[in-house]
Length: 247
Image 1 (cartoon, helix red, strand yellow):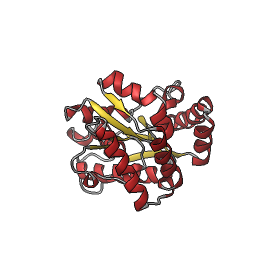
Image 2 (tube, helix red, strand yellow):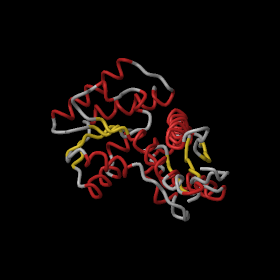
Image 3 (cartoon, one colour):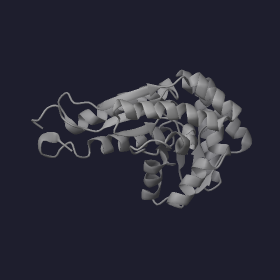
């Protein structure tokens, strides 16, 4: 890698959903790029950190078209700024990905792809799904996993969904980790397992703050945040080791 500047793909990040997730993405992308390339190398990123207050309003009001248009403006800005591909740091807002990617010509790395691949790689065909209320109560992500990866998706009960969603919006997006909330999440995971779930998709990019695999050694967790980050780094750096570091 003698040629400088080293050419790797520039990652366009639709962030701010929430700042906790965006911080984790930025920190881990750079750490993992450095582990791959060594020295002082880190990722090349452009972040559009949106106002989470707008996102919360759109989600609570079910204004999905407005949310898609809001993010479309940001996606266009990232492409114009030089991003080579886009990621969105929110499972929930993947619901409007077709709308915000409508006029974008660069690739989009869907959070469901590395997650679904990781689940099927373990031979799992029935999976539990945690996330915000739209992720659990509406079919957009369930359908993605079912249609693309032939997974049977199990979601919590309505009461459980309300508790999970409340903890995300009242605690996790603010960086607050409460033991009682962790216990509630683990109880829901056990309930899903009792209904046949062979593992759990942590389908919100803040859940990593609350749960990790050591909390439930016998039930596989699939952290969408970690899986998405790893795939982002792989895609950004896949040709960086070619002669001269040029892709």
